[in-house]
Amino acid sequence: MKVSINIQAGICGFETTVTACGSGVKEPTLIEIESNCDKIIALGESVREVRGLDEITRGFDGVIMSEARNVLRGCCAGCVVPAGIFKAIQVASELALPKDILISMTKEQYNNVNKD
Image (cartoon, rainbow, N blue to C red; front, side):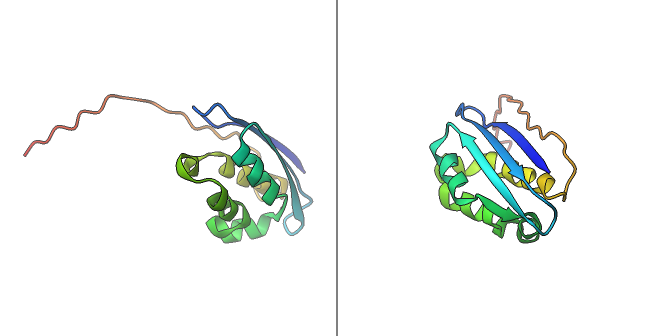
């Protein structure tokens, strides 16, 4: 199965397209990542092929999240792109059904009043 995901990361303005092609649960999934973010390009160069079942079994210790920890430092450590890559692999490997992912944000004023 071939899956393409477009990720708009947020205030940084970077956009990433992840394409994952898989042939089943135990077969390798090929990953292609296009981005205008240098760090995500570097991440894409280090995760070109993974096995979907291995990634799910290993979770945050899998190839994708391990490489993301190595490449994405500072404020980039909270980047949503690695989660998108993970989801693309799940669907391409036939381990999950395709469903859009949405993160929405609401901002409110916070007043920290000490009531002691």
